[in-house]
Image (cartoon, rainbow, N blue to C red; front, side, top):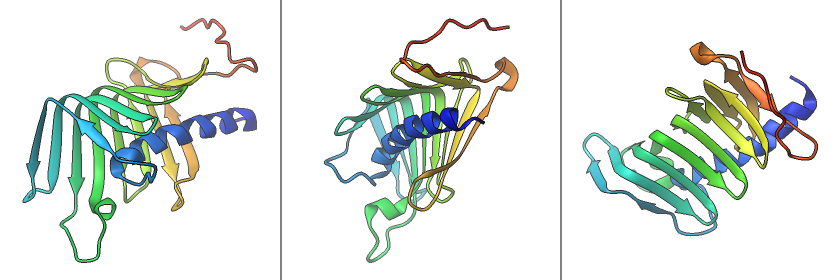
Length: 179
């Protein structure tokens, strides 16, 4: 992958990871607010399920989905709430947004232990967009190091076609022909 393409993707995707981490609770800027039509928590199973018009906001970062499931570890003495999160799965009309950075997918999965964020398309392709530049694929996976810096980006075309990256110097999308 060319260095310009890689640099653009990394800069854009860092913002999307930050948006997922807002839900995880790593952001320090302010209060996290999650709203939904319903919430079911089961401490025995260590799961919280937000259903219907889910919206998570912290500062300028937002996550929208039809459903969000947060799995967590049991509470331990001296541990923080952030340390308890195992995985966050957002399903249905997923949108991650901060300013002019946006990601769209049918499903987003953030695994805390593996530090991986996956945007997956089912009915549509997964999309990451910054201004007019755009990255598309059936599945976009971001792998991070312990400092949450992106180390690897993998984009899969899947059964719905090839991957696509549109990167322009002036930020204008150029029309593309798709097979």
